[in-house]
Image 1 (tube, rainbow, N blue to C red):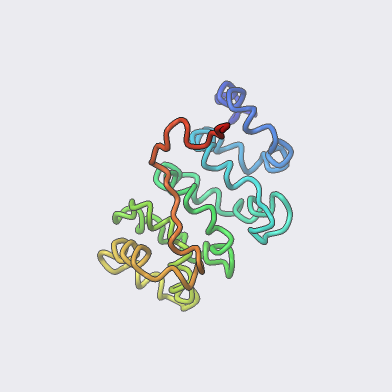
Image 2 (image 1 turned 135 degrees about the horizontal axis):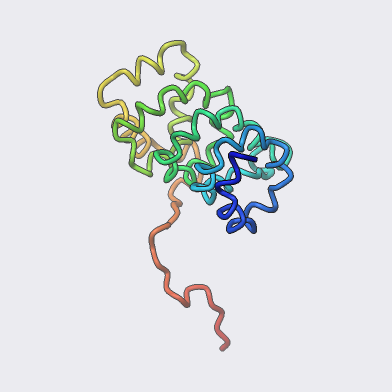
Length: 193
């Protein structure tokens, strides 16, 4: 309670967003409470990870959050750095959890981000990287060796944005989201003829 009390006003302000997940939060309060301030700062991005659906293939409603809970302590201090990427990484999390890839790539996150991994397109194309290079995470010492190379974050950025997507996404390979475009006020209004 002592770690939550300073942030009580923020919790109450965002209660409408948090309330549907309250049973799971209370169940895991011991793990989540020490990081209340940082979690509230990035609550919008983190709520994308709260529930899972059938397409994730992870089981129950909070199975995805349960699988990510062991990595909370490591990533919570890096939320300011990783925050802009969270929404783009969300569709790829089940692929990262497969074969415990997230555990193998986590030690290299600081190097990856500190070296210029600021390009959001890399996060959006993480499925492409995992398709073509996911096997390298299974080879002992290879990830550590790769991230020791100067310029490895730029290599990752180049590969993610240039490698073929058709094998990974099928016929949807040319589809991309427009997050910064303004469609105008009447783009989705029905008109009577």
